[in-house]
Image (cartoon, rainbow, N blue to C red; front, top):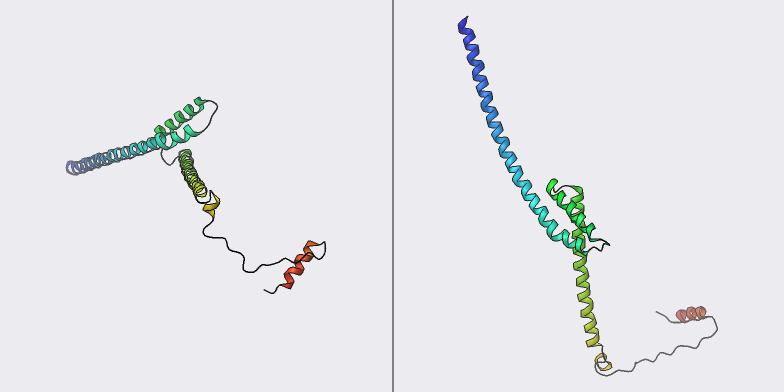
Amino acid sequence: MKQPAMTELSQLLKHCKDLELQKTKLQQQLEEQLSHNKKLSEKTRQNMQHVLDTIMSKWVDAVDTKDDSVKKTFLEGMQRMVQNSAEDNGVWQMMVQASNLYDRQTHELDELRIENSQLRERVQGTFGSEDARMSGEKRKAEDDLERPPAISGDIWADFAKSISSHPF
């Protein structure tokens, strides 16, 4: 009887040893994944911080408020969000989109201002004087079209008659 009990015990010990090895291996994999995730989340936080420092801070600076402490409080809240949340946070995404929209609209407004000033300069240069507006000589109309005198006091009836008398 000692022999079979010894065999069972050795099998049980071998199984425990295998489980411990498997546990150690899984713990190492878990630590590697956690380290990898930490690196990724740190990179994401750095990207979020960069967006906060560049795009959003320009947008906040451009917003008119009665009290500058409102801007400071808002930026502090956004800073906490960068530190404590992920990039897929809905509030963060909306703030990024709002500041990007502001940037786009500011850029488009600047382009329109430049285009407006160029057009004004061109109008002043090209059409600024009577001589600049005329190229060559004015010519007389080849066919002097005379307007028939009004027949009655009803302008719309005269218009209808005038239209119907001209073949197109």
